[in-house]
Image (cartoon, rainbow, N blue to C red; front, side):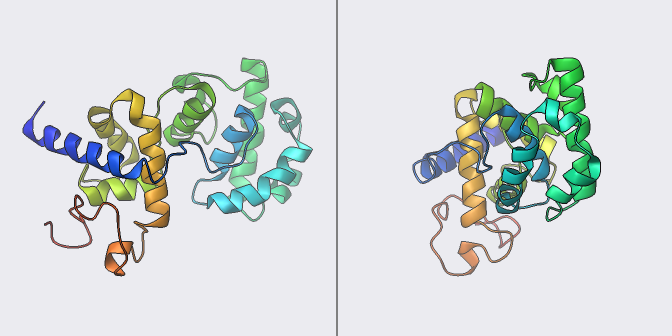
Length: 221
């Protein structure tokens, strides 16, 4: 391991050691009862808050509770059920198309491999990693906007590229910590290291203050 990677691994390890006791629940914030619901909810969450998705999905799943039902749903009715969510027209179409593929290729069940999940409309690596880790126990690095922001400010990577960030974190975070690491950074970014006015710039305590170089916020310490 190079000196740079050793330094970054130590920083990632320190961040996890600090944040994991503060955010010990390594579970999605999206309400769901099964893999199908989480797959749909996560696909809906792109460029939308978890709170908005959680307001929409109870009615959505009450009408179409599984892939077989969603596959036959009229597009305009699904659009109406999620109209308050960003890009609702495209997402409604993706929900129906995904359900149809699940029925036709997977017996109505959510597949358990990254390759099969990525073949579904509107499903990227964030969604796939979240479903695999939460529903099937596969360690995953879930790089959403909050995780990406914290990674960049910690200097663990230097470009806002979720796929490249995931590749870097694979080198820094051992498999048994990856899911919990993702959720801990997500909560930190959501509640403390916000996109606008993060804790360190508004004079509030930040648990990572002693190890964070504040990349993009202030000159590196």
